[in-house]
Length: 619
Image (cartoon, rainbow, N blue to C red; front, side, top):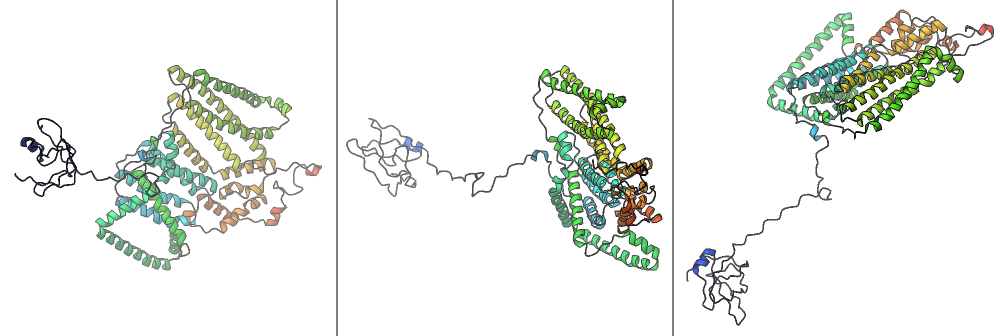
């Protein structure tokens, strides 16, 4: 018998065939065994149980030696053995269970992942230089107050964004230029006005317009979120700038060393020769002292904080310009269209209510006030005050009604669109008349009680709301594609105009004219105005002039702000008070009444009648 190649034992053969010849002499043809690739097994006897056989060393069977039952046939049939059994595949580890206590949480893509573009290349050298200039100027100039320094710091930050956008291949579009120019123009308000509240509005609006310029948003979600979207780039901007610094440092170590050495030599020359020239000429020393920021060790932490703010802000702006988040990708699904009657009937009823109210307003404005006075018992001022705030809220709520009506408006056919334009257009026109009525009431109220900061602010807001309704009417005629951006531009323009007209100066001017006409003035309120009001208050006679300007003069004399942190209004007020300083003492001011007139000098007192004093009314 020829030797068969030995096979490892211990593996069962599922075919039931053994590796040796049968005991009964019936042998399996060799061709079958060769075909199967394994030796045949002996068939057990029919009258006794099969005895298991141990594989011999010479011919090892691939089976385990277990008894194998052979088919009971007269003639031996060829038995084909099964293919060689293969080892079981290795066990694979289960994927981590998302919430399992021993597995890290699975990171899922954020809701805004589809809005974010791919990461831009590392920051180029021009961007890094502009960012560094912004940080240095922030540390040197912003620590002493706000003035023209804010505009100076914004210039290199805008250049960093422009360099990053050019490197990324972005083009300057008309709307982007509009946002950018508007933002820089708003930063001129702190340079011109001393009042803090218009300055705050201008700075916030400049930030919003600058963020819109970097994102280039168009839709309502894009304009609303894009106005503050710059905050989303603070972390990515820092990482992006650090990558740029590392790459440039690895590629050009020699250039960095040369640049630092050149800067140190230039600074040393400026310090040495600047000190010599300042000691040689007092005028040059005074000029140099005004131009150079006064930096001390005590201000170190504050200056360091301002440096980091400028650095992070400029990096965020440049990173946004290179790869802005596409907030326009956020969509708001329109509401389910309503049937015509279901949608139009409530709005038609509202239009009729507006029309009835406006008819009464026209009667009052055209001379029917006496009838209203007989019915209500209110004078002009009380009538105006009672209605202005309600009309302001009615205007705001009308905007909400229009927004919701557009969401569920029928839009299946041309007739539906015509119905929507007719109903909402009528509502906008009627609301414009309500806005005019509210402004007229405020005019009557101011004429009676005087102008204040709050009154001029809400009047300006009401006027801007009227502009918004005009833009909505234009969108109904020419299309609403530009409406979100147009309203944003109108808001920025309103804030800019509000700051440029100098509201404190307008308040002071109106109260001075009122004093000239009626002989009463609220000095306690006017002395709290900013330096912008000094030119108007300077026209008052004494002692009212000095009593109104005492606080401003004390603040200006105690201020040592440098030129870059001094507004034009503050500088002009200081010049006026140097030429004509305050001459009245505090006791004289306390002797004046609440209406700014000495006792015994009011009209009507000599006749035994004292006119009602014009107390300050904050509303």
